[in-house]
Length: 196
Image 1: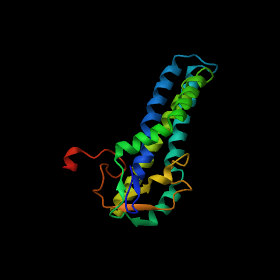
Image 2: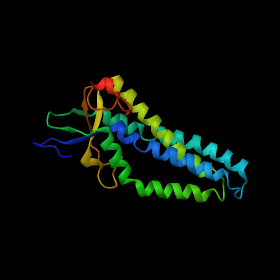
Image 3: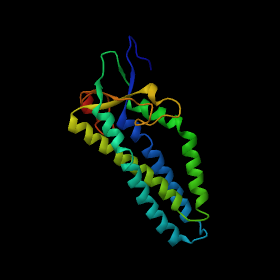
Image 4: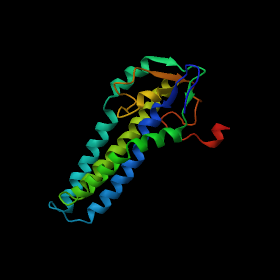
């Protein structure tokens, strides 16, 4: 996707945050399910208990980390220009997942391997990270609704390893009206009836 006449390709902030939620959640659930079948060094009861604690900690940390940075960037916004190109939700999701596929695979394998020591704990940790990303995307959606705008980040600032919409490469967000694009505040898919 390219933007002409000085425009920029823009991706929704909430969509980029939300992109990792489903893969982490489902990989975590599968790893935890397989992990329960392995007795492990600690035994299943201790493993599941430790996993539940890990799930809650990961959920809270991922959901709350860097909120100050998101608020700061949301305060220093610029209205998107007429030549800016808004990236579709599906494209943003696909790009994020393609860039992180090897990290997701390694995390899944690590969670499976950890089951031989602490059954299910690694999988529940992964699932907690996924749930935390969903909560963070929902929080961003509430920011958007409060300001009656949608927050967008330049695609070129998400390149390489700097794929966080609140990373150092990101200097600020752009905004559009609340109805722009094909995703609702928070990054969920907009219903077909709303797009018509």
